[in-house]
Image 1: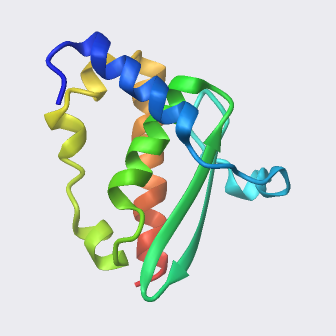
Image 2 (image 1 turned 45 degrees about the vertical axis):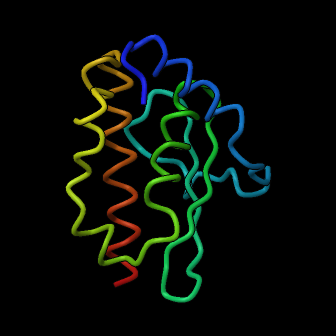
Length: 121
């Protein structure tokens, strides 16, 4: 969709700004994704056999990253998520263009999304 990394970065910021509301009472330790430098909360519910994610972060870029992952994987069946190779991250060059700490956070977010899916198979 974008050729320049700066455009992709701006898109992530926009995604973060447009991420839906996340209730303050859901910002609990058990919903925090471990391994992220920023605080990232991930919550989910099952609807008709599909995992529906909701998330928030205290950092706008991180919020954009989790928003992107939610756009891709929310509303899918657990087996689809578990079997996904998450290659979209490589195809768009996201990991290579993040700082090492944000790249580690991205890996942690992906791991948590897969873990949630695996628990709901």
